[in-house]
Image (cartoon, rainbow, N blue to C red; front, side, top):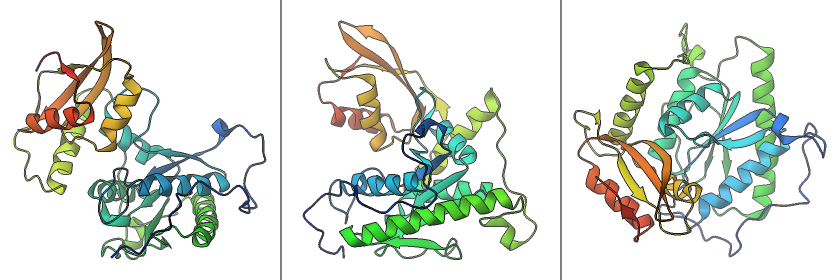
Length: 297
């Protein structure tokens, strides 16, 4: 049962002691090595509303204190296929922190991919979440689910130090292994940058696995169906709509792109990997903006 939470929402601590290797004030954040973040985003029981917004703020402060630039692996400035972006960032980010609290299926899936690449990762969790059998040999940093002020300060310092030491170890030792090589001679998975059908197949398989993990059962034959075009309500930007839509990812979503205007409204084209899930897609989008217009589909 979730312990009683303080009545305040975590807003950061300007007085927290900085790590010895934190970059000096005025340093350009864009020059920092990116630290990918994998964690739950949408609210779910037993955690209170906005719990994960507070947690990501804590993680980001620790990442910056360690000298890195925090960024969700699902985040990207350019428009593109969501799953491809996640896979690419999981592979390319030099260091990744993963919060497995609540055992969110998407988080566990993405952690598995990072471990398959055998690249540096720091795992964190709250005291409510038990260890998973497969990842229990890896050290987990723990924090209090009620985000108690003093415990947060201590946790941030520990996380910053763990990020620095893990990243440094991977740079000094070319044979450094987070997970796989402790089990013998296993070759880590690699990811080639290719254009064409290979990546499309990977994306479709990834979407199918996500559906099965989330308890939807086998997805059946997957194929790219006709694009669904919608007109956003007046005053709603593409960026705002995308952020809200991705807060609870639609498993059948393949790509999401702005495609023009209609009567002053922003047109968005949504490409789906269809598997009998179209009604749920309509319902999810309508739940975000009830007055949204479906142009076709």
